Image 1 (cartoon, one colour):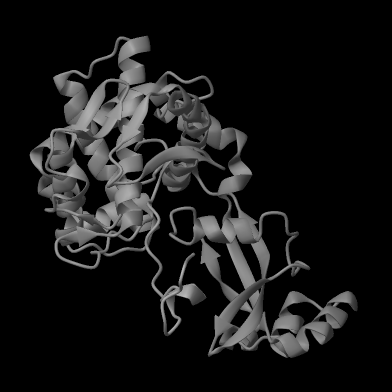
Image 2: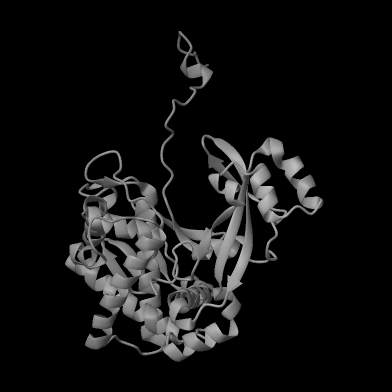
Length: 361
């Protein structure tokens, strides 16, 4: 796992503002610290190294774009990275204290490979084409940052393995999960209808009369697939689109358009997208293994996220004000970006704009 929750003011990376060059820590978590110099070095590396920046954006779902000057980074990016570092430190401290675990050399070597694999997977899921490999991104990290990320990967992996409800990532566990959820990995063939808003009422009426998926698509769909009855394609579990297609047709009977639809943009206009499953075929485990693994990792991450919140509540956290504020939000403890000054002029009070000074008696 990554840091269980993939979270990553305008902070001047070489500036002296807010004491960035002082001896105070950028982050302190229950006795573990990241110095200001180390943290600013990490931010600079992320924002100025294209390969590393790309993979970090995929992992943290945050654009690590430069700020107003050079080298700078936006307040949201600084807070996101601080969040990720806090979580890593909190878990490392918790695991060391309660499980007496310290990663071995072998654990760290495996964690490095795991980290690279997770970065690759994150970039693929985010549809990002990074300029280099995940191994290069790890190599581009400053030495202290790279060591910390591998250490955190190792302790996070160990932590997840010890949680109640975690499904072991073993071949036997994957096969057992597949066997009890085999319908989740059917190869799905679907038909679609892309319907203009002005035709929705007529589409619904025709559907109520019992028209088939093919008839509805031919009559109402604006997509070229309508001419062949809406047939759009078949998706195996190894397809990058499989997860979204599976969600779209989750509870829909075969050869039936659902009542609900998605609104999408098509040729400059908004259309209603209806998706109907036309066949479901059992997929052999060998062809579904990667999808099974992805689902188990997601379940483990959700389980870990729920339990990690307690670790963060118990942690003693302090953040250098230059990088954000530690507080409690709707999703639990988190680092929040500092508020920035208004980007528009502030209306002055009338007394400040009078042509003559006010006389006070």
